[in-house]
Length: 352
Image (cartoon, rainbow, N blue to C red; front, top):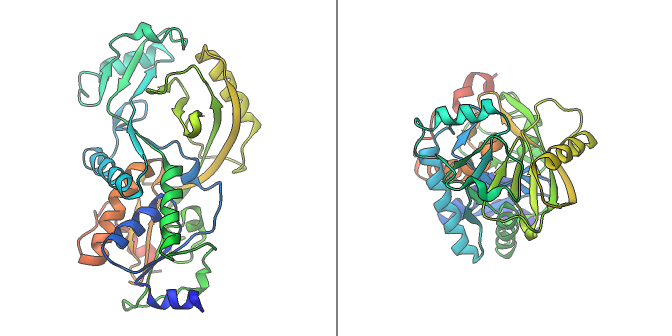
């Protein structure tokens, strides 16, 4: 009975409380809307095992991440705003030190440096890191980068939702959705991560599967002032630990942690790191990306009471706050969604 009352009085149902669902529910709640979030409590969701890094440059060519000039300052301000609301630390400025693994990578960085003076620079005193790492080919620095404590964000916002009776801790039965050609209440927004692959309203979108895997490691003597990179990333993690991982996999047979990844990462870590360390945990998860590497944001072309905020890929920490706000503004005030992200760009596919 209580759940039915919540459903009947809600303006928006948000399916999923990952980073997308968290920010969308935050902005809609701040706007005074009645929201209800469905999220089954699970420890292994992609948001909870992500490294939390916001990096303004990407790839071997060290090019700027899409829309980073707008997205990064917006995201930083969004996390800082939530810090005040939740009375807890969520984000810190933490640069990436890139220890070049080959002379070719050092040359690529040196050639890119004069063209990208905003985010790339040489390390002022590279020798200071010799007590910690092996690095025969120099160090580049990406500045500024940011590190988000996603676990704390999700946990603390979940507490807020519970206190306000805005959370149902169970999976949402998609058969309960009531699609319409008119804008009926409540509007249902799917922020359902990999469940979107089988969502009947949006499964025809060009999703692609992507797996992330990492070791959680104790390295007591390593300064927690930076993110360290040499083929793999060593990222400050919760409880004084480190997240150690590499690039995401596009072809995989299991979403579970694998011994092959573990052994490969140990070999890389032993070659790079001079300090003693201990493996504490091994985590893995699947996240939804898409072939265009642009998110899915907006309302279904045939059913204006059904929407989506998904497909952020590896850039969820930076993209989710920005597009959650843009979507909230669209829902409340009719403001436009960036056409490169708006799910309406797939109207023909979704209308079949």
